[in-house]
Length: 519
Image 1 (cartoon, rainbow, N blue to C red):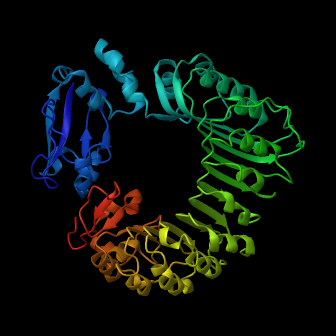
Image 2: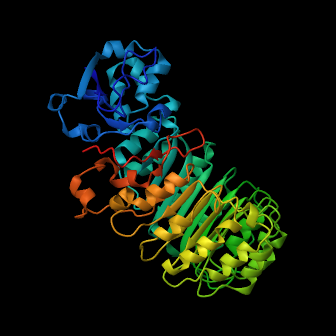
Image 3: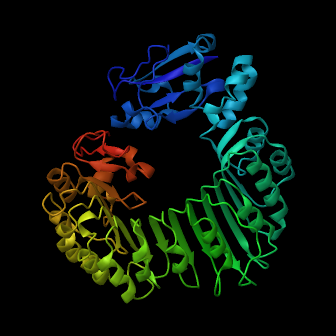
């Protein structure tokens, strides 16, 4: 068995990362290990040295090429005995590139790999779900820990047995119940996994109507769990809800709550959770089809710093929250006078997000109210659903937010906004470091266009993110030229900049040089 490493001479020329204790060349952004160690991974997110390296087309296509098919791709083979001669910490660094299934397959090779492949360092960041039940059940039987476990009903007998007998410590658990018949498994899973002591995040997604609130076993168990830091609850419908709940008092621990449910009137379960964790809650997101915002409970949360709500009702009463730094509200047809009044007086807001149907929303009133607010000088992040005709208003209000670092404009029908980009400068937005927009037409052509190059040149600290999720194959000259193939897909969401990545840049900062094509 040998270890084969891809050596990309086109990209680097010389080795830029060669640990002294490794007889292996980690050169280029990709590594290939055949046979028992076979995989293809990007190490850009693991080794910061490679975050400034632009991978070439041949590296991205390496899985489809033999080494002899292109002279710039060389390989070096290392026998497994030489690999096993590495110290434990170095060998763990190599094993960290393997997927869970591959780690488990490596265990029979020798006793050392049998033990090292179950090292907690290799499993504490692993995310598994029952789409791949084989590796999941094996991990629950053997692995010491997991970061995230996602299980979706229906639940098989093998999965049920693995969960009931597991000693694997899970940090984050997500349960998706499509039918009421999955309650018994969900309750048992909550008991077993929480008893192991490491559960800190719980995500409950209930796809059926909860008929009886007081007797529902899942809600009771979820409420009784200790030391949960993040709680997410999604329910299609809560029905037959009593106004009072006779449950025992819980211990406050939740710092982040996301709650979405359809309720006709008062939601006692939401009220119970808010009252129980009022002392610890810092982030609250409430999205409800019907019902009012429980402001009376929110104002009693001394640590609340972030609020996302689907209702504007009673927002004006939030003045009593001195630590509230982030606010996100939905536009439901009109901006309420209470919300506008709060925006004019809010002293400490640093992040504001307006949500709604982008084609019908008018952000004139809330944007002007925010510009008049005491928090305008300290506002750092602003996200707006915006029509193209509103760009002039946004550009004119930019100087009112001198500390603004992130600006996101969500457009229903993307179109040209060159005049807006010309208004973005060090004088109108001196602290702006990230601008997010969806350009009209082909994003590849926009990347080569003069508007982006100009705004990046005039704002040397700026990063531009394209909100378009699709890069279609089109007939523009740049797509026809075939350059920048490596930017298709998720890479299109990088933070494009006119500078090399610095320590204060986003991890995915990408120096944009359109004249240097990879074709």
